[in-house]
Amino acid sequence: MDYKKAGVDIEAGYKAVELMKEHVKGTMRSEVLGNLGGFSGAFSLEGFKTMEKPTLVSGTDGVGTKLKLAFILDKHDTIGIDCVAMCVNDIACAGGEPLFFLDYIACGKNEPEKIATIVSGVANGCKQSGAALIGGETAEMPGFYPVDEYDLAGFAVGIVDQANLIDGSKLKEGDVLIGIASSGIHSNGYSLVRQVFNMERTALDRYYESLGATLGETLLTPTKIYVNALKSLKTGGIEIKACSHITGGGFYENIPRMLQDGMHAVVNKNSYDVPPIFKMLSTDGNIKEEMMYNTYNMGIGMIVAVDKEDVDKAMNLIKIAGETPYVVGEIKAGEKGVTVC
Figure 1 (spheres, helix red, strand yellow):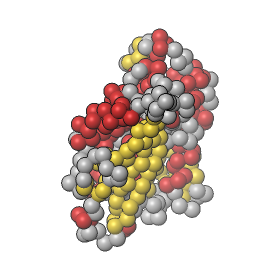
Figure 2 (spheres, helix red, strand yellow):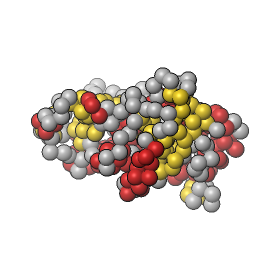
Figure 3 (spheres, one colour):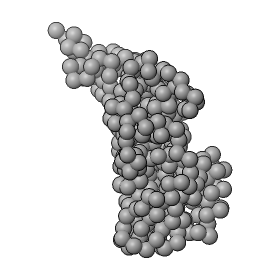
């Protein structure tokens, strides 16, 4: 008896690392010290000494049951983008610049080519956000996961000068809410999605005119990364007074998190077009509108609050960054919370 006969192939692990190195190489920043394969990842903070009060911000998350779609469709090259997005968007939401990322893959059987494909998506997300992929772990766990399944999670660290932290403390009545379009469902609410839609391969491969793609392609669309859009506002001189990443819990849970006591957000749901996938989900699942807004991003993945005098400039900067902005509401004085009307 040996480890391989017990279900863990150490040689496959070595091969997976070799295959992923090319993808990881493209994410490197000048601050990264050492090479992939050590016991830890090292990142120099020497270049950030000019900050008055350099402050680390971090985020960790996984992809959740969206992974089930990747298993069924046997498509694993974009799911890593979701993992990175869920972490770096939270960092950007606090005003931080993502610095580095680490991933964790647990699988029933280490298939080096599949693992490398997953990591290629992680590397893609890191490139989009400017974060270096400085390490990770692949754990082969036979008997714990089915041989053709895996879990994926990650951890990111960013930096911001303390004075530039976005915490909602400067919000005032009359400030305007700008929503930035999502790419679809992103990575939340897939346990409900899988209850509503038929998860058979033939059903997922069906093309819908309203979606402009197959159902499977639409559901696997990776989460939008908003790092560059928020950075463009900062470098363009726009003060982001508050920011909300619309993830699990939708509008009703996430928007209040950007508010201080005495501030109330009012969102006009008719201020933008809700993507067809949400309408299909609501209709097919007989899901009430309030529950949809309490579960999904409904087409708005990030919301920023800016002074009303800055709205036009902010909208233009977001467009230049390649994203689609909408004026979706305003801040009013009142009980902390949100009204969607």
